[in-house]
Image (cartoon, rainbow, N blue to C red; front, top):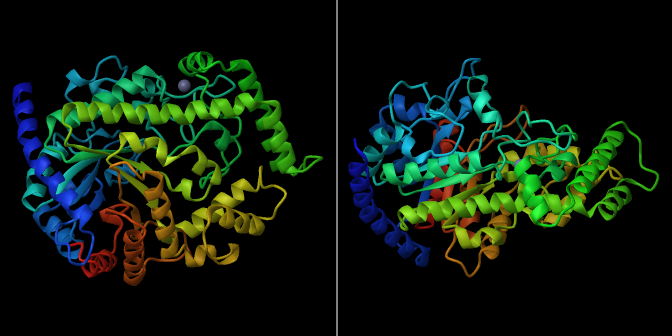
Length: 494
Ligand SMILES: [Zn+2]
């Protein structure tokens, strides 16, 4: 197919998408039992079932059980679980649609780096879009940054990766590609332009499950235990940008070194003379460059998001562009400050805060353990959970019960309400990600149809204007998906 045909397809797609947006707007104002227009009910899904299963039967199942009308496909990833296949040493991954190379300028990534070989020549978007459309389902590529890279693509990708405060290239989570690296920016913008121009999509969602280097150094993460020496990013592009902002790069680097020492001593059980919190605060007083560097990281990601939004809207203003927001924001008042949705309000059509209430118990506990090694080192993990619960304005179980009970539907409502308030005054819809069988560890709470239904109801009570059933169709028990559908029907949403 030549480029002109792609553009024609794009134009045809525009008409269809505009109609979709109008019906969606209608729905936004009639979110009541009387309203008949559908809200967005989205389903994320791996690639494997989309290239291997009978699509008519699968889409019929999603429609019948839960009124799904949008498909979020993990169409670009180098992680095996997002493709929906077992991890293997020679796994490659990449774009499960066909990369159209004219969109990828000035990036070191080659066609061989990008093209996923796992399913032969199948272009997942080309295969899925017409069939999904027949079922009244719009298709959105879901580009979620990878947290690890397979050896097969590491060589070229690594040149785009962050550099830590010791000058070493990041080697995976919590580091990742640098938002200020032009090669990564060009790849990302090329990818979204490729999707927007080459396929009849409804829009796309991009996500990044990372946070700034300071928060990683301090172990303030649901994936606790990171190496505090891996603070990012001090690559040449970040150094240049930092200098332009008037930040003394060497003082920032030294500050991160002192933070690293603080955390290492804490992990070794050496309590600071004046206490953990006082020492933490003193380090910030002495090294304010650390906070400036943290803000550089956080705002650089938002700048890339704004660029993605501009790029896609420049191709077709009717396409909906939105963001997945990492659940760690739900556990960390520090990342809550850093990931201010208000900052994204001007460049979003929708935002999906990940509000996986069932799995949240175990994740919050993991977060509290990490926090206990630094800022909250003066407190026990039990007290840390209590303090955080107060700071975050939740009413959830205490430390010992958290993993067995998970978080409640009330958490979903509170976080939805907070997200809605953050984007007030902007035409941004909040589509919370609700938990349907997100995998848990042994002994942890399990989803039930009733629990899922409560979470869905809570999201709409909190002001949601759509919902993203999460996090992957292939993980969901049919009866729990039906639980979501029952709630949506009860609310008159489907
Ligand atoms: Zn950088």
